[in-house]
Image (cartoon, rainbow, N blue to C red):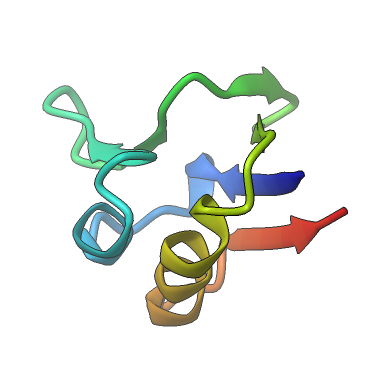
Length: 76
């Protein structure tokens, strides 16, 4: 399982996450910040649990590209 977490409040809207992992991230038309699709929000931390490991590569690329380092990816 892959667990992806996004601190949306700190997003600067650079769009790297949506470029590297478009199946998991989108940019909001409302405020220009990143949205982690199908995630649950708990106190500003948006978390998505993905059962397959196919998401690991693209989500790790998105996390590494993020200039403000607000995306974390864990494999459990």
